[in-house]
Image (cartoon, rainbow, N blue to C red; front, side):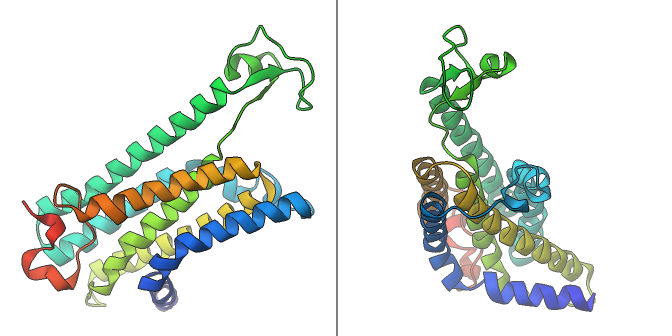
Length: 262
């Protein structure tokens, strides 16, 4: 438990700072641009992380939203109920996960449609010989063809969005004070370590995407969608009264925060 406590203390000191929330979006944009330019001008040698079958990509990145959803759900529920004591407010804050799910679904659907309507089926990855008889990606690949269209990077969208959402929700830890002997303390500490580790995995794999995969325009559009999803919610909508609201802040505990207005 002592090791868990120390790890949680380190992660809290790193990710809960206001400066991290302020500068992380800019850092992600920098990673994307620098990694993409390096990929174009001086590609790095192949590595374990450049293999799409690596453990982090297969078991984490491929289901990034599921991991983020499943860990944020108990974290938001426990921390927000501990601070507000009102089930209604907790449920309202948990609806941020439904909003996130909607954003994930809409954006990935848009990406799939863009790739479909801008693509064609070819005989090989060298784009030799158009196979006009195949008009969609599934049919093309099923018949051994290669579908080529404008493939907006889903990783470049989802990984920044998940990382920024976790950091925003962890800001509530500024206000959470628990008794070390209480089971709630253990639960929150465990979730802090899990979410903090997950955030570092998302940032690492986002950098790997920039270094090894997709073209620059595909990553630019993907990252733009991720940042817009984050800013449109936490930077704008969640600050309104008709929204799920921001994580509770001590400055308005007496009023249960403006974002929780009836």
